[in-house]
Length: 135
Image: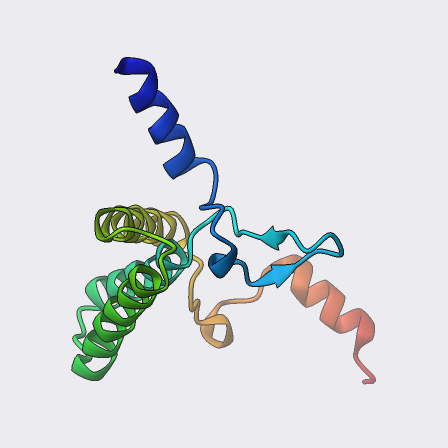
């Protein structure tokens, strides 16, 4: 039983489903190309990223919020409907993707949408600008 659970976890996390209906592209040998990261995980990554952007900027955009939820639900439904995932697999991948999006936003939040026009130029930049100026 323990080895079966480890094998199942390995197949769910590290390998995509080998369902030919899930392949986006096919090789010359007619083998489906399965993405290493499921589509539900990728969509949820972007949703988690934009949820954190709204949270840290202290703004709530209902159109963006509900559009992202709808996109996640449609993606989960389509993956389950095609047969690429079970409902539990799709929800699991969605939660993992959202968690990765939240963590990624927290890593880059200081550099995301920086106000470059209002930053003070450093001495090195002043020297470079003087060198290339026409004056």
